[in-house]
Length: 398
Ligand code: AMP
Image 1 (cartoon, protein in one colour):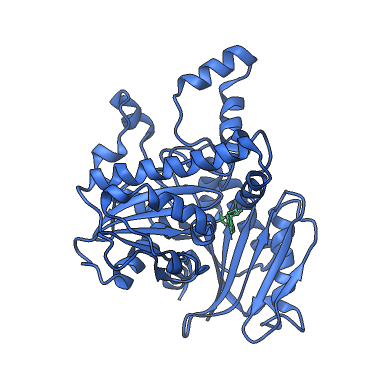
Image 2: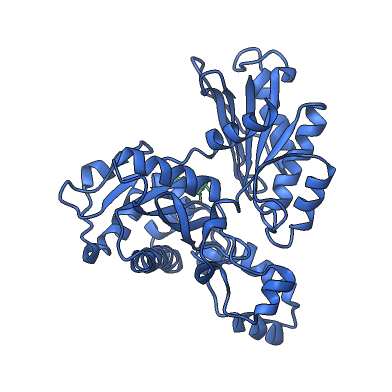
């Protein structure tokens, strides 16, 4: 059985076609910079040359059509027809309190995903576009939604309740949900295996640092806290999201600029983060690093602030768990930004963290990057949300 996994982010679309007989990846690829100038698809299939298509991708529907073309391409493709795909597993950001598990997509599921646009304004619309583009391109093939909010469901009340009148939780289920759950669950599980940690007691902090970014704390693979909240806006500084902010800032901007709350939240979601802090250079961390290297002060401050907040969250979660056995870096920035990892780890000396420069300088490969005498194991574990999603999808459709 072949399962296509689609992971639509705000500006990216990752995909993998996985043969579930042996969980091997037949083809995988990435559409980058969707909706931004310079978009491209990079497609890789086992035993074939890398296929790069540089075409404008104004939206996710165009991206999915390009993925299908690549999969059935006579030279670079791996299937003759899209009917060989048994099911499609979609990473979907937010299910509110309606679904606490994965589910086969029907009209009700799409309605719930649509109703949660407010809760995940950058991702839920992209996720739904991905689902609808697959329905259009492969009619009759089941689509499965795998929700990002599932991992955070094990948080205790002290971590998930906001200090606001309790009636709002009772009436509207306003609480912290946490996101990137599929990634945090997979990476913390891999870290426990890879680092030979106690599967029942290991205290693990996962730093999922990508265009969207979050930190989670888990004990024995169960989430006890995570940095995103009711929506993915809370927590770390991200590509375009502000992360933690005094809510009074919203009121202040509304009053000064004559904007509505929705308009200001749109700014906090789409025009803030390193994009906003750098004075509008880019939401892409590589562009920010290049600008810093050229001497741009605001770009340097944006990167410093991003790392500073990661450092603060690691400290908070080590305190919350009364210790930490492993700190794990994953996702686009976490896996690739060697100087960033080093800078973060250099501020964790008080925890007994010691980085091994040589190990840290290897790109995107599962490894321990702390020195042998480091009190905390620091690891780089590439996230594999696709495999996790494919397993959930298989379980529902077989
Ligand atoms: P993700 O959301 O996990 O796909 O991560 C995307 C982010 O990773 C983008 O902002 C990229 O700029 C960033 N990224 C990829 N490679 C690097 C790198 N070598 N250094 C810093 N950031 C990177």
